[in-house]
Image 1 (cartoon, helix red, strand yellow):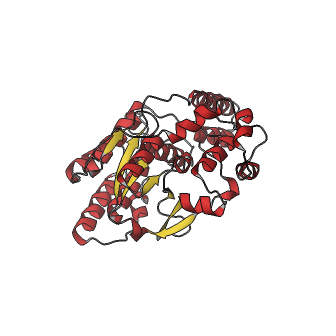
Image 2: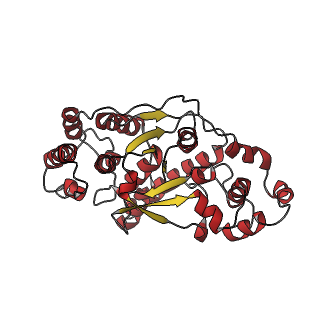
Image 3: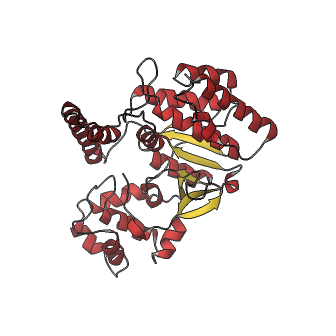
Length: 334
């Protein structure tokens, strides 16, 4: 979910060539949720393989990993861990929303309202152990290292960026910016400008909104609400929150407005990683990739095109190709 910056945020654009040779942390769960919501069959259901397992995420990650390969970017893919201390309310809310959408979908189906059922189906996303393991396997086949965070991936990812001077983190979760990431890549590539990627810059946000101290950004986030205090302070949206944190001696007010204010503030300040050395990428195993794709519901055409494109990029280092071709014959080519 993350922080709502509203109209205070400024999306910036940078050429894709800027990423060549850079290491970027990837928030795996964030992308999985997006792909499972995006890649659906005509009835709104997730794509599945012959064993009935969801493979929507794999169709998204194949596109994404080919883009990384094409750009010469080095992704470090970080998965959420089990320690979700402080996020119980957010996790409970997500669980309730999933159940609510599932019940609404079943009711709509019983009434024959298939359009409404499809809308609720798209909102019902559950990440299973298979989804995680298959994503890790695909990453390993592409040669991209993965890390299991102790808790939230964005916390670990930002800590890695700060410790090792990495370019940034790919996620749509604005909490990563509040945690201190120099930049978060929100769309790669950009849909508006395909030759660019979209990102939010920490320094730009601070400068645009006349915030002089990092503490002000953290307090702004706590006022509008984070994953650790979902609803923030009553009556505070982005504009009102910004006005308060730019006022003199505002901290005393926050102690009354936000329960456990000091504890929440320290969560964002005391972020670190125990990793001492970044894992190295390995050589892609194209033979294993073909077998993997066919086993997980990819057509023969999609599999051959994927392998061919990766080989061409490696041999010719051609910077641009049409990745949409990989998926253009999904229904026509079994």
